[in-house]
Image (cartoon, rainbow, N blue to C red; front, side, top):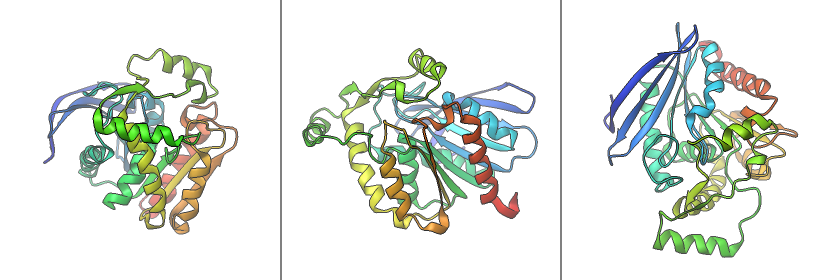
Length: 297
């Protein structure tokens, strides 16, 4: 299937009249099994979307988003990141965001093997990762969808915590600690909060090295925004307290204007796709994809 790993398990379930879900595990070159899930429309697909989820969560939390995409003939391919969901690894530990780039390489290659226009879609930590990936790899994709990127956290990190993160990441990089995420700031929908807190696949942990990577990667991505090479849909909730809305706005100001669609959502929290206005949010993404596809649509 790919030069960089092995699909070791796969199974298919039909859920609904117009789609099927393919699930499995892909083994990386370094022996890590990553859980993967694809939502595939029936009929002719018009585009593929590769999803990179956020810190502590897993790709199955985007089921409703994927179903909306397949209704418009967009396939979505996703995976649980290392240390997350059903994938291998210490909980909350991705051994360096550069490692995450290699994992994204595989799933992007898999999506592009269908010879369809392909989009990268990342949320929160995943949002930072797809921006980082696009700037580092300069991939041939139709566009990037980025929601609530972790360019900076909601409250500035005190210098002593940065110093501590540097020390711990050298001495014990895999050390796990609470990620400090306030679940009440995810969504105004209490059912979303309840489902998140009771989900056994969600982890509240983060490793020292991932914490340091988050602190260091955001400023680098910000400094490279003028080099962003492909169409970008960047969306940010204005009442997001988990990441900085101001950082998203500053990034948007530097991206080449002819490539950028920047949408701020007044009153919304961190998980735009899980807010009471989720249908409007998802519809905006769908319309942007169609507009970006242009004549090919």
